[in-house]
Amino acid sequence: MVLVKLCSLLVLVVVATDGSARPSAIYNNEFAVHIPDGDADDVAGRHDFINRGQVSLPPILYLLIA
Image (cartoon, rainbow, N blue to C red; front, side, top):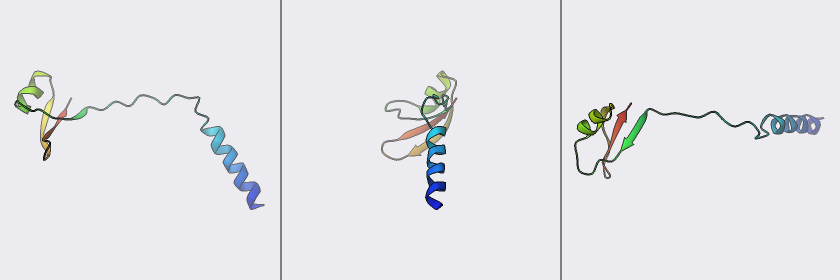
């Protein structure tokens, strides 16, 4: 009885995830960027982003938000 229920569940999972449907696109408005020779505020301003500041130590990354 348990084996029948387990097999039914397995068939249901396989049918539900057949892979034919393409997942919808995922967009992100946050970017961690490395700016080797420059000012992060200047780069963010030129591209209409907001600089949220430094988020890591070497390599130095800045979080920019669109």
